[in-house]
Length: 291
Ligand SMILES: Cc1cc2nc3c(=O)[nH]c(=O)nc-3n(C[C@H](O)[C@H](O)[C@H](O)COP(=O)(O)OP(=O)(O)OC[C@H]3O[C@@H](n4cnc5c(N)ncnc54)[C@H](O)[C@@H]3O)c2cc1C
Image (cartoon, rainbow, N blue to C red; front, side):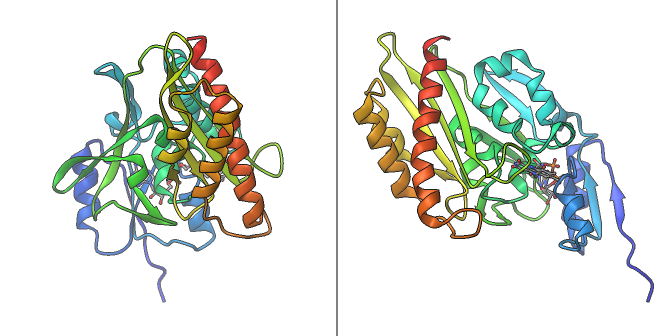
């Protein structure tokens, strides 16, 4: 039997990419950095008949200021984010999360869009984006729509994207003064591993150092990345004293519904989620105070 041919396309417009994906009869995949997709193809996990490389579409490759916030193209890499001083200053948590992905080589390829659309609850940049209140702009046959990042991935390998839709970019909202964020993960070794637990915190403080707004997210402790409003409520109105930290830890732990595997038992993941949420909040607070 003749092996099936795979078609590779690299359109230069959003409309072109969407038309290709929408019109595909067999399995079609977007290609960004390829650090997940190519590995999965080599392992015969996926066997797409059509690959649509989105890196030639200018909109997916730029970082621009927009209405006081930032728009980051879905195919911007972690390495590119790291070299953007102003973005790094405003959203250190988002940038540090993207830069935990793999090694230097991987970071030169791996994109925010690919990290989200690979559909892993342990993806490192996703909790940071969720804590940031980031919104994904999707493009599809019916046009464009915006979706909160926490609503894009529904379960492992299951996305809210419709046939023909791609993630085009992410919007980070405007930053009030004295705001910052942080992302921490636990892995069994120092690098090149998948998060056993991840925690993202973004917050704003007033002049007296009291937290006026916060968002807390957790990765790898449920089938999808969690936004945990109870954890945010636990620290808003406080200066993150010990009592507020304890409330934050308890709320973060209460939200966890983790798997139990050789990389971390259920009990361990729940325990670590509380610790990381607290530590990430302390780092975000420290950064916010000095901005
Ligand atoms: C050695 C190694 C180490 C790694 N370490 C980490 C780590 O520490 N933390 C971590 O989170 N991940 C890690 N990864 C996984 C991977 O690098 C990341 O998930 C990366 O961000 C994927 O981005 P990409 O651009 O390479 O995605 P791709 O491989 O190009 O795509 C991934 C999936 O998303 C889809 N997709 C991509 N972009 C879009 C889009 N814009 N719209 C719709 N669908 C899209 C693709 O079709 C595919 O199904 C590692 C991978 C390797 C090989």
